[in-house]
Image (cartoon, rainbow over all chains, first blue to last red; front, side, top):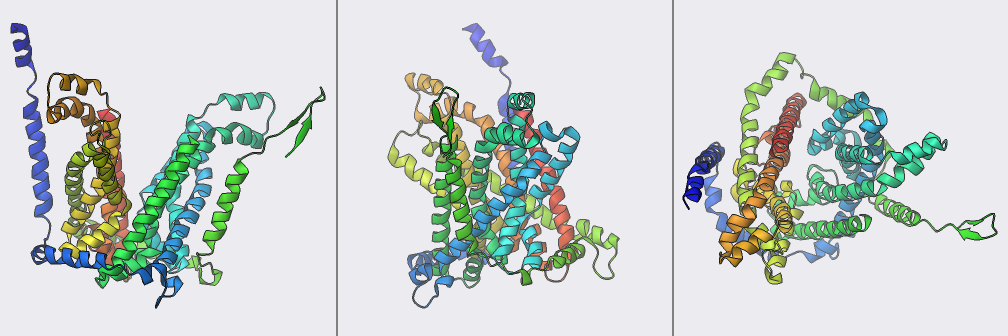
Amino acid sequence: MRAAELALKRKPKRWVINLVFVGATVAAMVYSFAGSTINWTRVRTIGISLRVMMEGFADLQWDFFFGTGIFRFEEGVIYLTLVTLAVAFIGTFMGAVLAIPFGFLASHNIVGKRVARIGEAILVIIRVFPEIVLALILLKGFGMNALTGVMTIGIHSIGMLGKLFAEAIDNMDKSPLEALDAVGANAWQKIRYGIIPQVAADVSSITLYRLDINVRSATVLGIIGAGGLGASLILAADSWSWNILGTILLAIVIMVLTVDAISSYLRGKLV
Amino acid sequence: MSKFTLTNGKTIVKPFNKIWIIVACVALLLYLFSRFIPFDPTFIKLDQLKVILEKMFTPKGNRTWNDYFMYIPKSLMRPLQETINMSFAGTIIGSLIAVPLAVLSAKNIVKTKFIYIPARFLMNLFRTIPAMILALIAVFFVGTGILSGIIAITLFTFGIMSKMLYEVIETIDMNPVEALESTGATKVESLRYAVMPQVLPMFVSYLIYIFEINVRASTILGYVGAGGIGTVIKDNILYNYDRVGASVLLMLVVILFVQMLSSFIRSKLQ
């Protein structure tokens, strides 16, 4: 009994450290809010805003959704959703194809440490460059349309895909390559029978995961005019048309959930 | 399908490779989707890309390089601070409110289907909506400025954190929980003394990782009016490309720094 009590007393006083930690966090939080310019009139009318939003959501525009009635099909949400999906899909495909050489360039196994560092640095810069800014730049070259969205997603995806591809290549078993060397295989045969069978599952799974991310990005890119749902979304938000906004949000939620479900089903099959 | 005759007279058929079905599906989807993308070579002006990059990364008109770089400490520190504040506050609040939902979504803690399925649906709902769109809606409620950014980041964090956390909770060792419950501990006590110690290290690691994601996301939230560096880009995108360029350079440095700091701390935690 005595020994247990002594042990309890000797226990380090964690609560002091915890208190300091929590105190510092709370202080930093307060500071974060203190610097903000809060528009109190807007905050006070939040109840009204909520009611307006709910009213809008209760009055979804089905003609706008399906592109029927006064709307042409090309103006409807269904069409815009398909454009968004097209941007994400083609962009991801393009990114995956472009990421393969970068993956080799950044893998220590294939090109050696020196070159791999350069490859990694390029990938970091691509990854870190904000997608919206990239789209704003590409907008000048490809115009205000979905093509800009495809190019943005294609280029931006290289950053993450290239890094993960390189990791997949570095993690693979080298003995099949040695075996192929031993039977006198050429470079192409080594890639075809030694590398592709080992990395194909990983690479497809990573690409599918990136598709999930890109579907969300494609919606956002529309906001600056790169095609798809985003343009209608920001128009609706600027004119406070909550029924239109709600209709678009519904489409976004259905689209993203569907793509997530399909992609995780396919990824489950791959593993 | 190709047939081979072996030397002993047997014939074997090379099985059909399923990869071709996948290739065909991808090709078909690419073809169908490409019809939605306008492609008109006459509208593509690649030389304009060079022009805009030059405008962004060189001083405009009679400004000097000194003006270009001094713009960063003079006018961008305040927006940068807003961006960091937004991410910090949003990460902390969002992660804290994610905890109860993550517990409710974990199958091994809550054994009732009627609770964990709706809880998972709720968090999936928040995860589907991009941070930028959350910010757009938040701006409607509380007006432009950092508060709408904090709300957007909070909801965004809530979505990711609850998902990551419930997956961790589901993989914990249940023996301590059973041991505590057998001694008559309540649900809350078993959560505090059996679940929390196992989950806390991962929670802190995720917290730092999500903060990193949030810094990246919040730099551009200003574009829809949620405060931070994005506001500067939005304000200058039409006339002062060099200001945009300077902001982008600052963003790159900050994101890289936060990323390195985050992976350093997380590697120390493990």
